[in-house]
Image 1 (tube, rainbow, N blue to C red):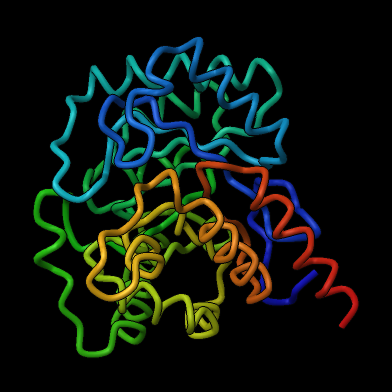
Image 2: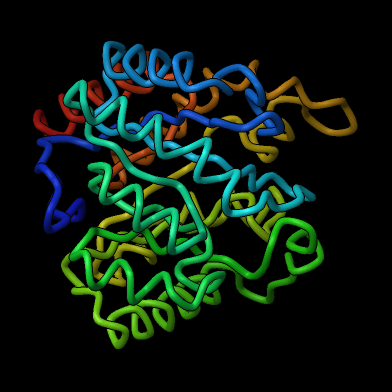
Amino acid sequence: MSTLRGTVQGLPEWDRCAVMGVVNVTPDSFSDGGRWFDTTTAVKRGLDLVAEGADLVDVGGESTRPGASRVDESEELRRVIPVVRGLVSEGVAVSVDTMRARVAEQAIAAGAVLVNDVSGGQADPDMVPVVAAAGAPFVVMHWRGFSESMNSRAVYGDVVGEVVDELRARMDAVVAGGIAPERVVFDPGLGFAKDAPHDLALLARLDALHALGRPLLVAASRKRFLGRVLAGEGAAPPPARERDAATAAVSALSARAGAWAVRVHEVRATADAVRVARAIEGAA
């Protein structure tokens, strides 16, 4: 196993980059909004992702695409908790993708093993205390504000240095709030308050993020920067669902660079990609 990859206390150890499959229980996700909106369909989708090679299934009930409006807490709970419960009952390792402490708390009570907060604990002041009290692993993503305003915040002098510094500050804050450092995962926040050149620069310098000393989750799946790369100069980017091969390429590169996990909408190609990356790593 890569010495960079690291382990997360409270989660299994994989001998390769792990694959986190996405189930969006939303009507308005940028990539697959509405396809898995009812509980039965969402649970089936999660089980299908596991059959295709997902190690974890990340369940979210609120779109965080640029410009998205927030849903209220009761609606997010209604969407998410039955799906978490249904997948856990089938033996699936479930992550909950939420910025709300109450959603995280109820998801953990329903059996979720990881809290994936795109705000890194900044959106809800109760999040860090709730996660700390539960002893749950916690994904801290680089975040500069809610979806409505994040595009205006994509201003950097040195994107890699600034993201590293801002993640380090969040690490200090969540540890001060009681979360064990051994349970923290970092996510560079591709596409969140970042333009395509910023995303590419961060992927090119995962080594700088590894210097923070915690495992990395890379969530590039179907994002805008891949559409820009595939389209080329001046052309319209392909729709989100036509970016899965590009996503698998990023998964292979991230795995080879020591990422702990990659988060993807379509699992099979990425599951193959990370296994090939592991085989090459093992032959070196």
